[in-house]
Length: 428
Image 1 (cartoon, rainbow, N blue to C red):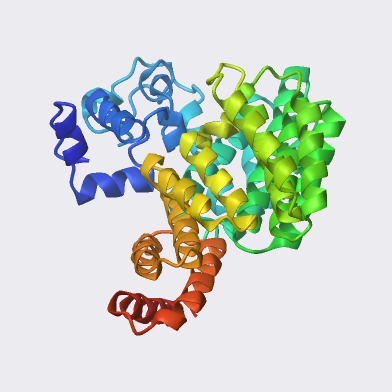
Image 2 (cartoon, helix red, strand yellow; image 1 turned 180 degrees about the vertical axis):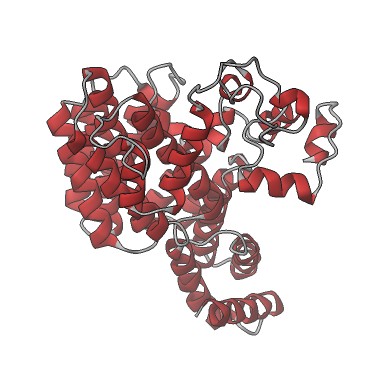
């Protein structure tokens, strides 16, 4: 953080204590200098995407009860100072904390209690409202940010627990259609996020169930954006699970659902999903046609209609998905070229994706007869796996190690194989 601050001319005295306060949630909103540094470190991300509370909820009227001691939720007393809201005022920021912690650390019953006010001493039977919808939306964003950095394996079981609670909120009912719409969309997106964590950690049957749940929610709510997302992920899963024809059909269904959403980037991704299915069917002509459509749509640029969940989809992901297509078609040279570009282009925030693209590159290089380069790429993946847990990436690296054994006499390859064996033993 100090290095990032120097890059933009800021000075912050960040130390381990500050980091601990951020990670524990004690700092709910950074001061303006730290906010500028965070924005520089994670381009395109808003503070809410990083897990911080809105500044107005910390500093504004009603952020804490009049006369109470500073809450410790910002870096200095000035950041905590608020105008009093009067005795008996509702502490909305405290309520938000309860909801957030329930989503991230508690089971469904605790979340339902925190959300619907059924904890001891509160009124039971309340309908779900804006706070509950916001809690679901926050949980979805938080899961995505954590997955970008750390991969799915350590998150899946924790993230799966709030899912039933989100649907309990739907069953509780709402008084306003706008809240019902948000809860349907949020619960569906949460099901997709949990499904992706299952997918990336190798739990394909669980992922399929979660995606089906999201699709059903989309159909009930008449939400074409959620339907397109559910079909998009279903197509990806079907490809990875060895059902390429289903992948093509699901991708085409996603395009049908998303055709009125005015997002060229969404349609680009959906064409890439279709291309992946065709590649695994061995249909080079259909795959190339879908890739051409995807690139043409991507070239139209981003728009306000792009779904929030597509923040991962930039030029690096475009290159990475195309690399996977060429790899499936057996064109290792082209696959390695695209995978290499994906690694170079990826935003450093997406640590998991850098590991994924580098693992893809390593596999393509060894199949293209370049074992020393493959071993070097494999070594970089091992470095990244110190902070990323993904069964999918580990499996790709194991395949690469298997192919490299025939080149074990080469020093660079031998070094990688030894490191890989040690890492495998530690993970067992």
